[in-house]
Amino acid sequence: MDGLFPIEFALQGADTIGVEIREANIQKAIFSKEVLGLRNLEFRRDDVRNISVGSYGRFDAIICSGVLYHLTAADAIKLVNTMYEMTTRIVVVDTHVSLDPIESVRYGNNEYWGSIFHEHAEDATADGKAKSLLASADNVTSFWFTRPSLINILTKTGFSSVYECFAPAHLNYGKRGIEHRDRCTFVAVKNDACNLKTSPAANSFREEWPQQSLTYVREKRRPWYKSVLKRINRSNT
Image (cartoon, rainbow, N blue to C red):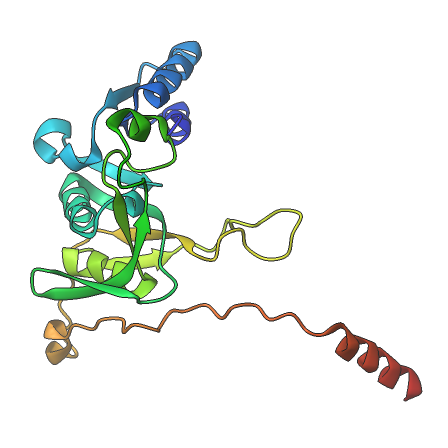
């Protein structure tokens, strides 16, 4: 993280705290803050696994960008629960997801699916891990949840609504389609549940997204000759 999101929010007038674990990244962020003279912005070098209401307080919004998929399954779920406690309104999660339910993990009484991602070599040193700026801080592997499992985690945590962001689109400029089919952004809203008076039985009804749902169909390229034949057929009619 180079402080882009915290700096933008601070420039928009919000009191903002940015959290980053690597010294090189935090120094770049602090330099930008000082150049811009942002007194409403603070950067802390910390591990997101350590944040809490007690140490940071509560916020209107929390942006969790490029973090969740660098954690183990248990740490990722714990972070979601922590962010739920720390926010009064919304949490935005920008993360990679697993396109297939390959591995399952249990957390409490719940089962979630995803895949294991290797962050570092098994024999990687602490110094080597610190220099890998685009990898996890210390864990050798991380867990990427499937889209349904991630939504289920957010709702089970207590968020009243979860929305996936499609605009603005994360496009692969110059090429056809989106840049990463396995990356998405969710907006989780924290609000009090409203008890229905017209259908009281629905108040205790809870649904989960099953695996293989919410799967985006992979794009198939049409053979060039079909397009040619279609043009020929139109010219003959």
